[in-house]
Structures are given as structure tokens and as C-alpha cells.
Amino acid sequence: MSTTLTIEHLSIGLPEGADRPFAVEDVSFAIDKGEILCVVGESGSGKSMTANALMGLLPPGVTVKAGRAMFEARDVLRLPESEKQALRGAQVAMIFQEPMTALNPLMRIGDQIAEVFAAHDRYTQSERRERALALIREVQLPDPEKIIRAYPFQLSGGQRQRAMIAMALALEPKLLIADEPTTALDVTTQAQILKLILDLRDRRGMAVMFITHDFGVVAEIADKVIVMREGKVVERGAAATVLNDPQHDYTRRLLDAIPTGRLPEARALSETPALEIKGLRKVYRTGGGFFRPVREVRAVDDVSLSVARGEVLGLVGESGSGKSTLGRTAVRLVTPDGGQVLVGGTDLAALSDEELRKQRHKVQMVFQDPYASLNPRQRIMGAITDGPITRGVPRKQAEARARELLEIVGLGADAALRFPHEFSGGQRQRIGIARALAMDPELIIADEAVSALDVSIQAQVLDLLRELREKMELSILFITHDLRVAAQLCDRIAVMQKGRLVEIGTVHDIFLRPQQEYTRKLLAAVPGADWEQQRTATV
Image (cartoon, rainbow, N blue to C red):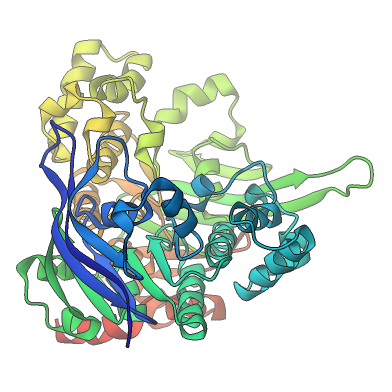
């Protein structure tokens, strides 16, 4: 088998003042034609830096200090910029974790694919459109004639990722680099994208460098694996060997941090509800006017459920099922069109804006991306104390409570004096939890709060939530697309599909005795489910 890419002794230097001198240090590996190499490790391990170096996309101040990357007898690290541009897309292509940051929001999908051909001066205008259509069909996007005219915001997350893959494949590259392309996707979409990449590899004979922190994904698609830690390769080998017989302590720790799928012991739940949702409805309407019919989407369609005091209720379902809308409606970030949201007997849905302000502290939200919800110019102390001070809590008391909460979430009181950018993703998520707790809520809504975190940080945040539930009798509505995480943390699980609640029950009921075909489909789509089953049986 011929080798597509060989990396030899690669070192990438970080700017002065960084926490370590090298982002990547003395890394070597090779990828053969038609092979999928998975690169695994925690955030900051150097996975993405390695990929960005290959693409010539290193950030300012970060430079290649040593080594080479041989692709078709050329060192791609030292090519002139004009040759790098000719290589990108044509021979080596990359797909990113978040396609919305890589797609132009003002251009139709078909035009963006055609632009790849234009940049490399390939084909006539009509040929570009035909090839764009063919690519859209190849990545199995529905209704290609409609998709080619659509803008990125009109597509779902999974559809946008497929559009990115179509762009990456446009010039038939020999190497595809995929940087966490499935992290933010629900399990069924994730399974579809992985199958698509496997099919493309088989049909086109592409080499694939697949960066991930999800060992379920590794089990599903990898031929070989390298494990990185703090810029160095600590383990490498065939996927089956690394997954089932890891040699390095770090690899074993990463594997131990994965939710095992083992179901927790059932807990006795309080009869006192922290949250009652009754007949909740939210309809989004678009269009209208000349020649444009009104389109209605029932995002939440007559949903009723309750969360007991001290209970963690998991809310699962595919993207577009209405999970996040329900969570945002419960906290009144979205105004419902009907139904009740009862917290402590008060219907938040019926309150005026002024009345709502007095009651809003009862329900707090922890978001998927805490960085986006924190003011980058405000120190952490201000982020945590603003809410309580607005409610009338004296500043000194609010600040003392903030320091106490930072200790509780494992950051230490000194964190109060720092800015958001000085923390890792997992640490920022802890700050988000501390900020929510500062309001003394009766309920926390966690919306995909651990989905973008690597396995070890995810495990720490889950342990923290579990601890808070026990210590503070905290009630949590836990919205997630990761059923393994839901199994680990939740007491009961509610399953949503197209705005409706299709099934609700204990964790044991949902995982061992699902009643609905849709629930069974979600469980079957979990990446690496067979490997995890075998692993759980031997743990």
C-alpha cells in the first residue's frame, strides 16, 4: 500500500509567554492511501495544530520549528504560499468542527462549491453547477436542486457538515483532514456522517486524518490511532489494539473517563416538583407576503413533563426535535405560544416582563458555549455577581458567595480576578455553572453543557453536577444528544421528536426497554456501541 502522507519529527513553537514552548513536539506518523488514522487526545494536545500546520493555517505567532511533512515528494510545510494555495483543496482538503464558521453566510451552497472550482480555474460555469449538483448528491443531501440554492442558515447542522464535505471533495483530494467534524451533531446525524466518510474512503481511496476526542467514533471508523498529550505522541497502533489493550497510562485514563453505559442505581425521587410543564407550545412562522406561503414549524407541540426536586431529567432527541426550544421557553428566553411553565407554583409563561424579572432567578441556564455567554472584557467576579447585585444582594455578600462558589466548582477563589480567555473550555463551563448557582435557583437547565468538551473534562463536569445535585438537592433539566452521558447522569429520560414528547421513563426503562421505534433508532446510532458493550462487559 502506498503512503499518502509522512510526518517526520514535527515541532511547532508557541509564542513567548505560553504555558509550554511547543504546541507539537517531535511528532512522527504516516497515513497510507485508503487508510483512516484517528488522532485522539484532550484539548490542547496538539491535534488541531498538527492539522493546521499541514494546511498552512497556523495562527500568528505559532511557527513550525522543525521536521517535515512529505506529500507526493514535497515538504508541504515549506512550500511557497502560491504552491500551498494550489495544494489546498486540490490535493489536501479539510473539514472543520463548526461549518458555520467556514461557510460564507451570504452565499448559496451551490455558489460556494462552484467557487472551489473557480479558485483553481476548473471547468466552465455551467459545468461547475453540474459538478456541484453531483457532489451534493454524492454526500446524500436531500432535494439537491433546493439545497444548491439554499443559504447555510437554511440547513441543519448535519446538512451544513455534508455541504462542507462536498466542498472538500470538489477537486478529488488524496488526503482529507477532518477536525472534530461530528462533535456537535446528534447521534443519528453523527452516524450518517461517519458512514459517509467510510463510503467515500472506500469509493475514492482517500487517506483520512480524523481528529476526535470520542473513542466511540474511533471504534467505528479508525484503522490506526495515535494518542497525543501536551504536543507529544504517547501511544500509537492499530485501532483494535489501542482500544482494547492500551499501553500508556494516559490512554487508559482517557478510556476510563468515557461514560461506560452502565446504568446507575435508581434513586428515590421527591414528590415535590421543581418544574412542571403543561401543554407547552411554541410555533415559528416564516414567509408570507406575495407568492410566499406562511411556513409553520411546531418547535414544541403540546409537551407536558415535570422535574422533581433533586432530580436530573435528561432531554434527548435529534437536532430539530425541540429540546433547546423547550429549555429556552422554560427559562423564558423564548416566549411560549401556549401552556404553562410552573416553578414553585408560579407560571412563568403568564408573567409580565416586570414580574418575570423578579422570578427569573428561580431558573438558570448553562449554555453549550460558555465563552459566548461571558463578557470577554469582564472579570469572572463581575460575571458571577452581576445577577445577585441586580436582585438587591449587597456587593460584599455577593462577592463572598462568588468566591465560595468558585471553590465549590473546583476553580479556587483566585479565579475571580481573571478574564474568560484565561480559562480552558472545561473551566469556563465551571464558571457558567457557578454563575447559575449564584442566583440560588430552584432549577438549572443545562443545554448541551458538555457536548463540546473532551472526555476527561466532560467526566469532571458530570462529576461536579452529580455532586451539586447531592449536596444542594439541585434539580437539573439536562439537554443532550449524547445518550451515553444521559445514562451516566440522569434519573429519568424524556425523548423528543419533531416537537413532541414521544417517550419518558427511568434510565433503565429507556435504555433496556424502549417502547418507541424512534428511541430504539437513537440508541442504535450511538457510535461504537458494539465496542462499548464489549468494553462494559469486561470493566
